[in-house]
Length: 589
Image (tube, rainbow, N blue to C red; front, side, top):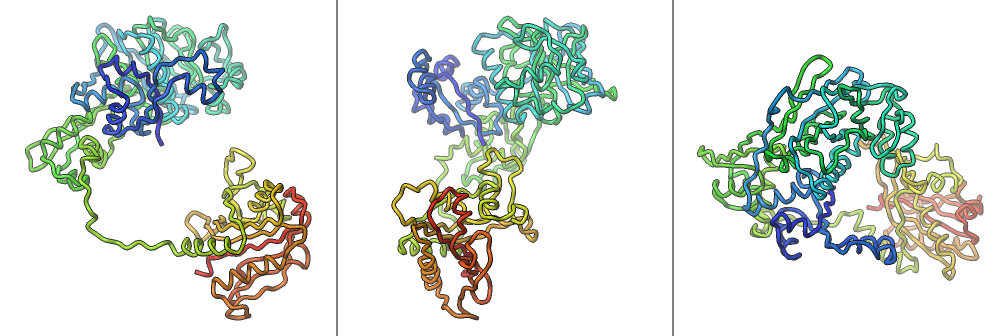
């Protein structure tokens, strides 16, 4: 998974990155990113809503950059530019420092035990003497939103609150109260609401309604107060209007509440490392003290640097290059991983900065060395071990059958593997409880509720969508169905089936029977009981009584053919008789 970062071309130029579009595309590729498209606001609106809506939109060139989902440090202009400048040796990677306030005690955030029931963790920090411009402010808000969608898992794991520290006074209290007892003026509203009223108000809000479910059913809602009882925020829904930040804000109090302590620390580190650049003392962050319900105190942000050691031989072998220990240390330093040869053999000591929470193993360091070396610079080599590939037998049989079924005058269809419960049960005259179907736990649409247990409904829906085509309609499909199977470790298995239908003014059972004979001829199974194949009358509510038969191959039931029941035909909105054949092809391997 990846995230998109959309940036104005002249924003990048303002920070000493001046390139042509082709050069920038090449730079992104070298850095392990992808320049997805070069567009403009006008072009985007025109594509989505038509030219008339786009008439007043901006023509400023936008770069849409694809960022890997684990690189939270590249989700804003500040981090991306910093990374690229270090990569191009135009800048040394900054050292982030946590500092004590110049005067007085650090800001305190006191967590009460009530929060345990809903959202137990919180961390905080202060950005002191920061200078915002409109662009920096927009980037600051956008980074919060990107983190909320990504590492915060739509605010369910972490919610970020940023406040103008000069409008509030510590110590701050993070507690949880019944929704009726919380009352404040939320961001961009004109009057006070209780938390209960806010829940109703935001049910129709296109942005905030997606987060209501996180605390909606809880007996108490999380809330942060300052020492005067002013509400800073009701995480993860909305901040208070009183402490909102603006372009004039000089001191920012950042709090992150969470259900996952590690993620909270990472998110706080990202926010402060990206924007401490604009503080009077660049890359310094003022500490805040968090007091836990048991009286224990912790200082945040952690901004933890750690050292890892690995050998240049490991990197050379894994990447497929042959570079000196010093050269590899230089490559890693260009990726913001300050490295040096220790002098002990070919050992390299790598410093992992707080911005790189994605580095958890030597493999991650090796990957960065490969990026800095340049994937295009790695010499192509033939693999040392030769293997001869073979087509998967089941797919080979499927391919062979498809060719000959098409030659027999049938047209191939490809349908979705998911369908509605009605398609595989009610419409075929069966009960869903009797089907060994795998159900989707939270289906987005009624069309995709279960994995199909039979290919027949898909073909009947294809006929229904093509009723205007000249008769007869002769269709087939060879695909997998999904069946519950307790013997498998995942509780289900795929089964490759072949299904064909004939739709005309007369049922054409002889056509489908003929296709069965042709298929068996291709599979080299003779028409005989015992070692060959034969059909035997059967009862099935999907088929017309007395017009249905089971197919037996070497004494084993592999499928069924017959004329479909008129009720089934009506339920699929068809008007003509139809014959069908469905069988398992795995026994023929």
